[in-house]
Length: 310
Image (cartoon, rainbow, N blue to C red; front, side):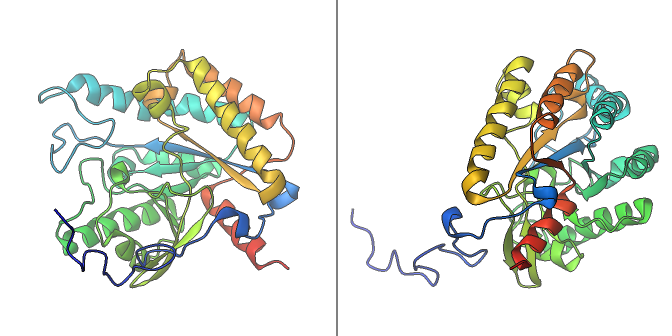
């Protein structure tokens, strides 16, 4: 059966991207990035502090890490709670040992349940990234627009009020968006979003309310992806981090500074028997030359400063 003659006729059909969300850009044609202190790698550690409701809705889908068995799934609920109460403390101790600041992606409901987490984040000098309301309130295509706007406002305003931080970044629960999520984020004063994994470096996203940045927050160099989903060992977790670092370091010789993003889930990497592997991985990274450990906002600011330099 032949395609209709007008099948390939649509407004955005031209060289480059076939949509208006962002411009076409390839790495070899971009200006090389310069990080502070002449660093070649910006290390971006993020910790995901997530609240999964015990009655987590099954639709439109369950976010990764959600409830599994019939209600009440206390086995998985309490494990997630363990990560937010105990596992994160071990991760923070490792980060402090290596003098690494991080970005904490946190649900506003979790911040309200455990306000000490917000206080500890501030004490460490870490950045708060709004992670939505909770892992049961997803953003998805077809949802009511006013409802989504309220979810964004609730999460961002709650975290700003509790932390006193500007809260410049956002990551949607499950990294799921509707067609309007980015516009709502821009209207809420969000400067960058962590949902998009299609580049190694920041790039501007266009919305009807103005532009915001897509930051390269990893879904691959993550304890949940490598250990839980791919069933790799902790030694392989370290190996893949080293491989990622080495590849980015080699690219930096030609293209300028790169970003090494590592995503951590407290109920995974914060276990007694696992956290030593995080310690080993970070010790190796920080022993390398030209590494700058920073938060997402610091990296974005340095990226923009580099772009403006002669």
